[in-house]
Amino acid sequence: MKYFYIILILFLSFTIYSCAKEKDDSSSTTTTELEGTWVTSCNTASWSNTEYVIETITVTGSALVWKWDEHSDSSCSNDYAIWTDTYSSLSLGSEVTLDNGSKGIKFTTIVDSIVGLMQTEAAATAYNNYVFCGDSDWALNTAKDYSGKTCDGVTYPAKNATISGVYKLDGSSLLINTDNITSVGSTVFTKQ
Image (cartoon, rainbow, N blue to C red; front, side, top):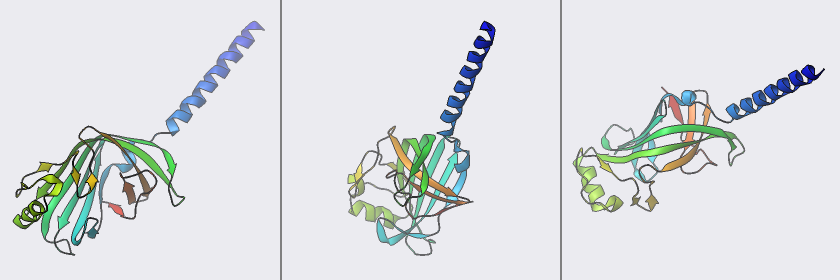
């Protein structure tokens, strides 16, 4: 009878451990569902109603690159500047409830660089005249890292900082935000 109780205790211990492990695993998601390239249509830039952008997010393993191709025309044909945020150690977390009541997935990632590159002399001149990020030496086709700086009232995270965000995936459509974890915004990225 003593052996029966020992076997029963071992069985229950294994069952409890297995359930606990299963619960832990369900609170995180692999980055597989975000893997690939996601692109928006040509939209008015959030920082200027006279500039237009196409945004591209590329996820490869735990690396995430978010790029804004800035254009001077509403058809996004004329190149102006490129803004590229590069992140590493992307980690998807648990499900969260968003402001609108829908569900999203929280994530964290580490800042590698936040870079701007002027594609035309006109862009370099405009951003220099504006002293964007406190800099007046923006140059054509020369990348400049502005991580950790305050630009036009927005303070960008420093290199190696860990930031949090949230995303919502609906088939081949992605909504994502790194500004907070309660809203994914309205910009739709489509899987390529």
